Image (cartoon, rainbow, N blue to C red; front, side, top):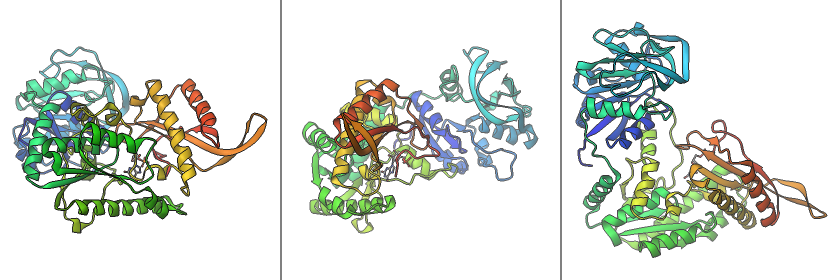
Length: 513
Ligand code: XMP
């Protein structure tokens, strides 16, 4: 990627780190997240105009606290420390004693009283409602710094050493609940860092295409389409760059949602005129899965079979050098920065065999999910594809608990399709991260007309989330649930009970297996 005006966000493990980078990008400036302990010369090599120190769960006065390379302060760059980031500044320029456990911890909304605007708060009202989330606080401003603001529990809620462009805030300007958070970030970006707005998805698309052309040259590439948005957008982008030299392989493993195979074929083959090989391998997968009940064993078999089918198809194309993958930024960040606690374990097309010797083309690896969706829209992908809920690689196999049968899959698909139709009808689909039906293979007694029934139960699951790492159950109006349950028991043969899952993640997971 061309050197552009940018900001580096150093990650000290806060839940909001990705949000900081997204907010900066929303302001039109490219932001990249690096591990909090990245050496200063690696940071300098990216020529950022400023560094943001993120929040984090640790305490700066603990011996094993994560700290940035102290040489970052010699780079002459503007620095903004947020929460733990401000405490790092207070410690580095003062002493560990400057940071202590707060008598009254602040979580949630509080009022910020601004004492000096010092460019950061230029045009910002006071008092200001801000979002805090801290157990520690800065007691005293370090030498050379001035206090800019205070709150009830944080005597130093913002501070600065303006000549050196070092700023710290205890609150979170990046979260929605902070009033004028965007104005504060913009003051830092455009007034203090003197950045220009040069990041936009349009410029991203142009550059990404140019880069793919350079990387692939006259070579051929394959892409595994899954029906999901990431692989779809990656394929559409690579198609713009190399046209017919991209072949997309879409494997129907018999575990797709209702209408999925047809939609993907229609969109990519007919509307986009992409080189698409759609393979119906469902018998092959379902044969191998017959009698298998263990979820991990199901995943293993599906993964193995997927690779076998994919490899057969790719080798029949011949002379393929590149593999296009829809890796997105959160995947890269989650496995790449030391400070993030959780590493994603699910990958749709993981580990193709080494002997295939394909080079990866990952055009979306700097984008967040919402940016991927907007790129998809700009490339003209239909909203049905762009806004489709995420879907696991092993598909419905992890939503039919226990052994898979054609009959159970049929019931599940019908119930799932009704649920989706209802969510769309009531305008709820887009606000939900993921919604689906599960067949737990539990039978219960019911009554239909004058007859006793002994039928299957369908569980509905719908969650809100930003990254699938944590999730809350979606507060779907009772009337919608009521109508959906009514439709399912009436329209899906052999189902006589519907339950709604109200478990959060953690401790639950989004999927049932
Ligand atoms: P869980 O169930 O772990 O799911 O809360 C988090 C996200 O990952 C998806 N998921 C998978 N994706 N292969 C995938 O490609 C898998 O084996 C797999 N299992 C779960 C899930 O749908 C959710 O979006």
